[in-house]
Image (cartoon, rainbow, N blue to C red; front, side):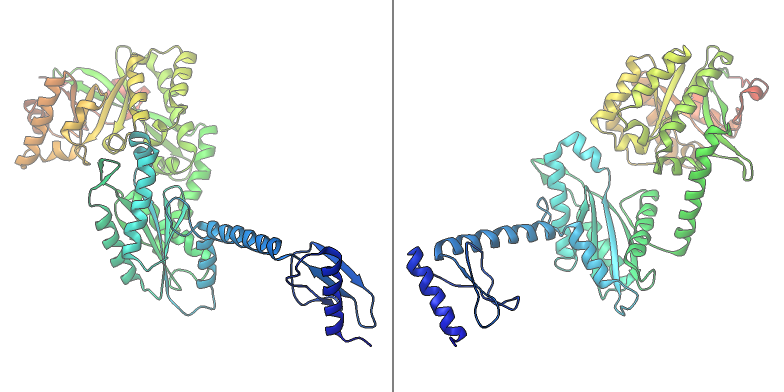
Length: 498
């Protein structure tokens, strides 16, 4: 009986003789077991006294080409799954694998997870271009690799990043987060422009907050939300109250969807008086008459609407109701608050035009109020939408001025018809020289630009007189009238002598 070795040699000789090519290697399958894998170009099945013997032959050149091509493709595929092509950070796929391997109920090691979002990244893309935006993403990863352990920075998508720190307690993670934010905040030159970047971070630690990867992600995400709510540019560590707040937000979101359909929403109007004490206009303020919680102020549900997709329908409801009420407010402008989320929608102007057309209201009856924080992060597209509102005849007002970092020099580029000074400055004027100087400076800007300057939060006659002396031309606050339903507005209005 021929041996396996002799059969092997015979097979090689047969192929060499028949094909006239140099044989590099073979693959042999005995009883279904593949011993030496090779690309199958030719095959010969021999029935022998032993089990089935398959001889696989390949030339050196073709085999080398196949192996090299296959290895390169495989390396490319693996690299694509591990490294983000734009930033060089680990991919979402690689991050989730690491998270699952390191965070589980049986693990005894401590792992800190940091979720990072770049603040106002959309505005960077819109105003400076996507090339600068891409460079900002790479800059963040570079800073991160210099602060956190090598290979710990992952890009989840867009401007969202995750950092996984093994054997790291919360206090160490927070110190690293603070160092990262401080380095990131240093102005840098990107594409010939000086750019200042900030980010918000949410931190959660296993096993303290959860021993499951998906739950730890949720905890870090809730902490990230809290960082954004606090004003961005900071970090927040998860605590149990955040989970309770999340459940509350979900409940309010569900109930708010029903409130629009069940006619539980109301508009209350607060008068704004000119220097002679005559009512110049009103501000429309949404209220929710909840069947269990009673009358709810907007700060209890509008932020939740902004985090969901409810803000658009809520904003449309406010404009429609204000248009309906406008007939009862002849000669008065109506101020309507507009969120940054609404202004970022391409459909915002279409909604305004449609509602005004359907109700027959003149755009000149309305003042669209934006906060200083919205103006601070306004993209070119948002600024153009504000300008379009003015072109339609509507007015634009900058609300809560002084609460953020919106500089005086930026006022010249913002399409506004009025500045509303935050109540904190108006109420501090009597004993705070800095507040008085600031209000007077804004009053001077108003005179120069020929725009209205509104004093918010006027609660005493002294505050009204000081604000008027400083250059304010319109006054709003409890001294002049509280927000009330339309039916009660006429009786609530007061005339204050000049």
